Length: 464
Ligand code: BLG
Image (cartoon, rainbow, N blue to C red; front, side):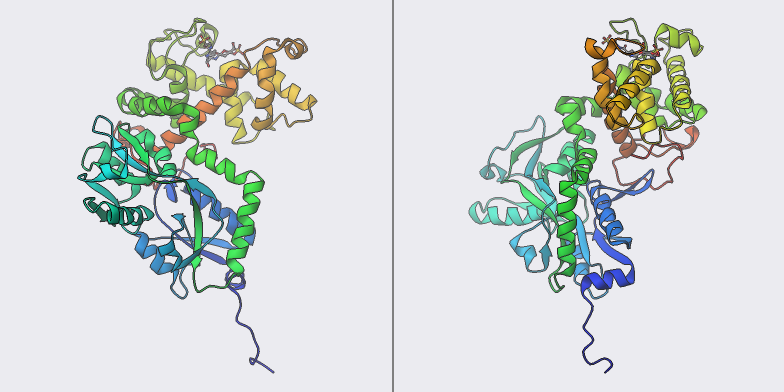
């Protein structure tokens, strides 16, 4: 008998049959945006892996605001999954069902440094507060208002989190509420914003499916999230998107934000020009320059290494640099040297590791790097993977190890920090600057917050 007892396919079966996972998110640096390599963002990367696991294509749609997002999720033939940094709440549970949490975040009250700092919910009275319309923060404020009726707040659906932080930074509003991950990611662009206090405990961000759906998709999502939690993928994504404040430290991130505005504009043109000549990504070159001298032309290290790109006398000579303190010469010499090292590296080292190896050699020298690669080989590790070789580099300063190497003692810990810092600076620079435009196409010093880069990436950017 045809038709009589054909069961309706489950949500998961439908997705697999269609070959497409339709996901709704928000366009913001913490969720989904375009950068030099096209689509990116924490939510995007996570949900892309989920789609890959299912063997289907990912189709991302963006909602204008949170109300719009929840409405679209319920539509027949609409997106089946929301991945948008959502925190579960009683109110939201009436509309959707949430997955296992994948990221713990704390709601934080944000104020501007130099203004009076609120320390409790009662202090929110009399302040100009703005939050996203339909956000969990708006829900929190509604709750607080029951106890402190004098609290006034504005809900806006015309802004994103970065706008709220900018408005606090510029003093247009007194306070906002954002989640800790969003602050961590954006702190570097807004040097004046500070955490006043945590408004409650940490909560889990989860994906959501429409309440009317069966369990099939949600179960699949939960086992995927459990898997990426166990195999380290989730942690790597967290480090990549939210780790830079941890690595740089609060003071480092703050200082970098200031130098981005005060110092980089003086040298940006030169970084672009030299990088272009050597077929490098100028942001990588600028990141090296920041690590070396914090973009100062006239520095000299304890060991006599000098200038913006910290060239040794030998390197300078080899690269045709006559005055290491001349920033133009220094940047162009550094670029030449980096391109030269990149070229010299073993063909078996592939991107993105190739870039990290080149940076390490820039700092410690190719000979010592090769020693560390040999040590890796002897330990059964992969000499072509940065993750493995960086474990070996610190051994070059221990006699039991360096005595057996060809080039002997080196301060092997230094290149490990060197590369880690440059990666963070490079990440930030790619979020705030335009992609590799030609020198004369770009207004100098024009920095952007993330989410606005639409141009195609240069082919030589290392894929992170
Ligand atoms: C690098 C050279 C490499 C050289 C290594 O030293 O300088 N890089 C440059 O000049 C760009 O060429 O490799 S070698 O030619 O194979 O020997 C090893 O000698 C520079 C490093 C040294 C480091 N900074 C660029 O990263 C430095 O100054 N360290 C000392 C810091 S402090 O004074 O102790 O604080």
